[in-house]
Length: 320
Ligand SMILES: [Ca+2]
Ligand SMILES: [Ca+2]
Ligand SMILES: [Ca+2]
Ligand SMILES: [Ca+2]
Image (tube, rainbow, N blue to C red):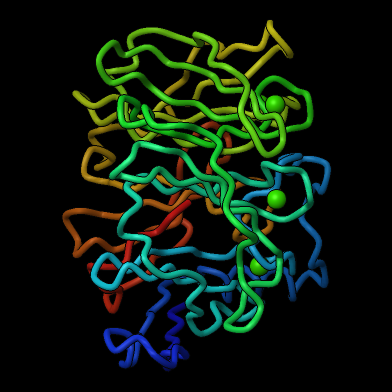
C-alpha cells in the first residue's frame, strides 16, 4: 500500500520553511500499520509491559511516536507529531540548533513524564538538558528552560547516546565514547544531572551509530545497538544487571553490512511506531537521497517497516 501525505508547512515566519513539504510514506509507516490496529480493533500495543520503562519517541504524550528533525539550513528544530493516519504538519519547536553538534532525544531524563532532549554545544563543549513540556506548540514551548548537565569537555566524547535506564534505578542514563581512547563510559542519570562516568567497555572506537533501543529482547533490561565501522554490521548488546553491576552482555548481529547497513546514518530509536510492542529504528540512507527508513527489530533481525521519501529533503536530519 502506498500512502501519500502532502502537508503544507505550518510555520509562519521561517522563510526557508515557506514551502510545501511533501512527504511520501511508502508501505506502512503509520497509516498502514495503524490500519492493522484498526482492523483488529486494538489500539493498545501488543504487550504494554514490553515497552521500555523510559518512554521513547512520544514528545506530546498522545501515545503515538513522533519524528523530531533538525533543518540543517535554518537551524530550526521541527517536530512531526505522529497520529493515527500518519504524521501531522511540521511544527517548529526550536531555533538556533545549528550551534549544537550532537543532539539526542533522551527519553524522560528528569522523570517528570515528558520526553527530553540532550544536546552538546559545539563552541563550548557543554552538555545541555532541554526538559520537554509534553505540549509542544507555537505558543506553548516544547522545552522548559535548559539545564547545563555537563561543563565544557564533552567535545572529547563521541557517540553521546541516551541509553534508557541501564543501571535500573528508574532514571535514564547516558553512554559516550572517549574519542581518543575508545573507552565507553556510562553516565548514570540523576534526574536533571549526571553522575560521574563509569568505565563501561573498551574498544568502542571501532563502533559508531550507538543507539539506545529500549528493551529489544524483552528481558526487562534496556539494550543497545551499535554498528561496526569496518564491516557495516549492526550488533545488539543486551543490558543486564543493575546498579554498579550493570553491564552489556555478549553481542548478537541484527543487521549485516552486506545488506547495506554500512551506508545508513543517523540511527535513532523512534519508539514503537507501529505499536507492535517493539521499539523501532529510524536511519537515513546516504545512497538514496538521505531517505529516512524505519526498521522494526523482532526475532533478532532488523526488518523494514516503512520509508519516507522521495520527497524528503536532504537538509532534514532525524533526531532520535
Ligand atoms: Ca506523539
Ligand atoms: Ca522530562
Ligand atoms: Ca539509570
Ligand atoms: Ca533487554
